[in-house]
Structures are given as structure tokens and as C-alpha cells.
Image (cartoon, rainbow, N blue to C red):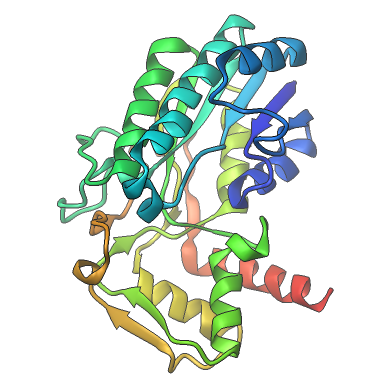
Length: 287
């Protein structure tokens, strides 16, 4: 199978590329300089020439605070860009896996969100991802919409990887603030990429939540990261979501009902996955 992957240099995209390259021919789109997804003709030409069997669309604008300040740019990249990719993939008969987000929910539910829950985003970023899901539904019938929650991994650019950022700030004596009232299902990019690999060989199209089992607040998660890295956690300060500039959903815990029923499997607990991730990060630091 020939697989084209957008956003291949990102935290998730890099691991998707690595995992898929073990079994398939991969075309890794490295960034805007190689392919501007907001340019429809450029996207159509690029994907038509590549002739992929599967497109995994992981590229996007993910800075939530910046999205609020620049909604036009956010919607152009996340929504219209996704429309271009979905239509181009459909034109050449390719399946599409679209990487969506937990931000399509408002976070008011007290229990984990499943694939059938109502979407109701509370910020521009979430709205742009909801619009993108609709573009995928409209323009490519052979689609998998895969929502992922808080992702962690050892890949991607270190300056954009929150675990590396946290480590550097702690070592420099800086204070870090993480919310105690934002609950999520932390998910290891390698585990999620392997789930996509299993999905890619099927035609069970639809919406799926891919997440490691368990829950944690942002504060609990990053404190655990620091502990596993052997760092001092005194400078990790608990705060409330209400103290943040842009509203974010409080609860983005995931329940993967459709994924479990369709593929008869689940991802391991996030704590075990984090241990593997931190070991990989430690090895990277030594290099």
C-alpha cells in the first residue's frame, strides 16, 4: 500500500510515518514548503501525482491561544485545507484517515466522551476541527475520522514537544503551571500510530476515538512525567482552567466504544505507555 502522510514532521506525524514505513511505502509530506494544503490546485496536483492508496491527514494549526486571535488563518488551514486533502484523496480513489481532536466537545459531560456524543466546541480551534470533520464526511466517503486527546511522545521537534519543554524549564529553575480541573486521557503517539496501522487495512469507515486507557489532569500528567525523568517537581504549580486566557473543555476523557467494538482491542493504560515514552526520551537526550 502506498501511504501519503501530511504533517509528517509533527509529534504524531513523525511516529505515524515511522510505524507505517515498517510495512508500507510512505510518502512523507514534510511541511508547508513542500505542500500548502490551503492551495487547492497544489493539493490536487501533488496527490494526483503521488497516486496514494491511503492519505493520512495529520497536518494542521494546533495553537489554541493563537487560533483565537487569528480565526481566519485557523479555519483556512484546519477546515479548508482538510477539504482540499479530502477531495484530492477522493479523486484518486484513496482512503482518508483524518486526525481530529478532543476539542470538538465542550467538556461539560461528567463521564468520558464516546464517538456518538454531541459535538459542541468552545473555542475557535475546536470549531475549526468540527468543520474539518464535516468536510471529510462530505468529500470522501472512504474516511476514518480519528479523534485523539492529549498526545505525548518522544518524536517531533523538541522545541514543540511539551515533555522536552517541561524538562528544560525545570532544569532552568522556571515555574510551570498546569491545570487540575482539565481531565483527559493522555495518549502515546506510538500506540495511536499502531492503531491507525491496523485500521488502514480495513474498510470499517467512520468515527473513532483512539486513546490509552485511564484518565489524568494536566497537572497529574506532567508531574508524573517529571518524576519519571528524575526531576524536581516543586516548580510544577497547580492552577484552574478558569485562569487561562482561552476557554478549553474541562473534560476530554475518551471512551473508545466504536474502536473497541470494531477492532476488538483497546490501548494499554497511559501510565505504562508513559514509562516507555520517557525511556525513549532519556535515550534521545543521551545522543
